[in-house]
Length: 332
Ligand code: TRP
Image 1 (cartoon, rainbow, N blue to C red):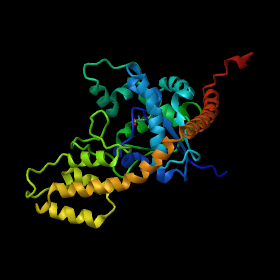
Image 2: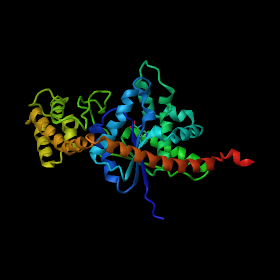
Image 3: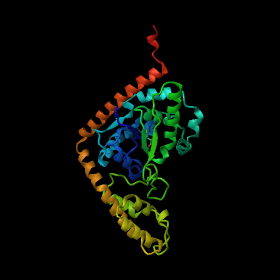
């Protein structure tokens, strides 16, 4: 049998996708989409805004699908799955919760950080348990590989642990999936903060127009006090972006060399960066516009993908019920 290995990965629908998503994950999805059977999940069960802004979640489902099509994901080979339309995810989460010690969740460093971000606001139970659902997402298509951003690795570690426990205790159902982090594991924000993110308001979006990108780049945080000071490209956001998105290596090396000597102004570094990012984004913008003018096609991608996701979910749940010996009514 020559079955292709499977990828499951996903994103929470909280808004449009940005350069950090691209360099940290999407780029790998694109590279691997023809090699693996892919399930790209829109994880709408796991959006904490649900409690206060359902309309935004609903809109974001479409935004994410448009962004995926815009970067070149192929919805015929990779399935775009809307999580809550495959309620098996909730069912598997319930079963798996019994095999996950509370302490493992409490120790999860990514979850810990996110819970701290709630500050004084109370944390919904569903937020605390979302990593369990993420485990269910990954195990649902019995995935082998999970290409994600660096912050997701603790969840994948939990997935491996749960798969091992389940297989050992019941039946060999789940492969132990590997995580795969992108070329740029964590992209800084335009303000120099450690991570580009919508909530920090420091992101360049894949759908930003050229003028917006140029404005954001020109306003980027610069650690150096004066353009004649020697600078360190390693700690300068503009150079981190040059490394990530400017294919003209000679230009980048020349700028870096002059920057170290205090022989280039930040404006030149940024102007060249804005040009590079805009060149990179142009084809993505074009494709986005084409799809945005044809939303029924986007809908088709979501509907088809979700049906495929549901089909493999049913198959897996059969295996899970069999492994757990849940056929109570078969007794008499
Ligand atoms: N938690 C992920 C994020 O915040 C999104 C996600 C949900 C996911 N389910 C997943 C990622 C399964 C990989 C696999 O980005």
